Structure formats: C-alpha cells, structure tokens
Image 1: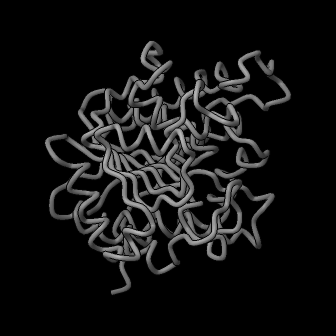
Image 2 (image 1 turned 90 degrees about the vertical axis):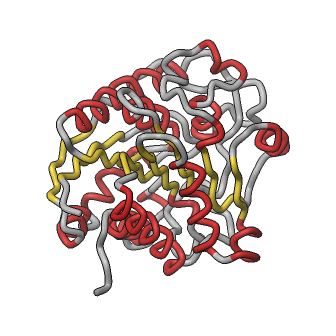
Length: 302
C-alpha cells in the first residue's frame, strides 16, 4: 500500500526514570529510517521534532506521584496537534519517542476525528496512575491516562483519545506491578503475556490482539515500546526485562499487522518509543526500530 509517512519526533524524557530517551528520535533517523520506509514503498516526509525543552530548562514540579506531569501535558498537546494534522492531510503519522508518555498525545491526535483501538506491544502494562505508581514516572502511566483511570478521569488532555477498554490489547507483558495486575484484571482490556505467546505462538496472539483492537472502530493505533523485545535484541532501552520476543518474532508481528492493513485498511497511526542511545550498542536498538516500522508498513522479504 503506497502512502506518505509523516515522521514526527517527540524527544522527551520527562516521563522516564533514566535520561537519554530524548535522543531516541535522532538515533532512529540516523539508523536509516528514511531508507527503510522507502523500501516499504512509502514516501517519507519528516516533520522534525515537536518542541520539548530539555529537562534542565524546566521546573521539576512538586508532584512526586506524577513527575514532570506539566511538561508531559505540554509536549503531548503539541504532539496531538501534529498527529491530527498529518491525518487531515492524508498522511500516516509515525511518532518517534522519547519515553512512552508520548503515547498520550499520539493516541489523542489519532482519535481526534475517528474512533480508534490500540495494540500495545510492551514488556510493561503502563497501567499505573499517580496514586498507584511506585516511581511516579509517567512513562508507566500512558495507557491508564488514555483510559481515564483514577486521577486521569478529570484530565481532559490525558484521556482525550476516548478509548474504549474493550478495544485495547496489550501484547507481550512480562513485568507488571502488583497494582497494575489488579487494575488490568478488573478492566475490559485484553492482555496477552509472554506466557501466552509461549503457549499459543506469536501469530495466534497477534491475530487475536488485532481482532480486539479493530472491532467496531475506524482505525488502529500501534504503540511499540522497544523493551518488548528481549534485551539481547534491543539493549538500548531504559527498563530492559529478560525473556522478550526475538528479532524474528518482532518482525513477524509487524508483518501480520501489515497483512491485516493491506486487507482491511485498519492501520491509522504508530509510535516507536523508549530507544535510549546512551544504553545502546552500536545503535542496534534504533536500527531495530527502523526495521520494525518498515515491516509494519509493508516491507517484505519477497
């Protein structure tokens, strides 16, 4: 499927507990993203980065339960506008993080003129709220924010995507906080752990996740945290967890997404997050991110 991909950088580490992910967008571009997208048959239009002042230029804020929440709000507002404008112009928005808190803006922009479902590829649930988070880091909260849980229910900027939990599928969980586990079980989201992938196989799990996300909505947003992969494949992430998916499994998942999109035109927006060049080895993780984006957008072996 030929399309114009609008690349939007969101170089923020406000929501993370380790510095460096703000350099992720540059690292992914340097890793050959433009060439990878062209190999997928797409035209690449780079919008540059949304304004995200360096941490040193901002006040730290006083909310220890949601650190730098005002900065997170500001950058996500700008990002939502960029994503929405891309879609209005007939372009496919591909967001480069930055920490995973940028998903709040990606989803809000994608859902501004359409209903969306979400497939969330991540080692973590990102289902904490300020009152349950053990760290106060907002990159562990974006899915809860978009669903309007707890304190986020009254924050219009956070839950602007209007997500229905029944259209949210988490894939590849293997490191979930106790409070998150309870919240996920009590919600209507569908969660697939790495144990599910081990038992059923990746293809079956991803197909089911796409069914969940796409049912009754106008498009699907894909959120891909690079820590979904095993650290041997993607070492340059802030919160690595052993036992993730392999290189080939990750590409197979993206190829399944592209196949579904070719048949039903469901893919509306995507983000790649949590690439930390400081922790990476020879830009390996950024290269993986660029390759996976290409696979999701239709690049094939033959």
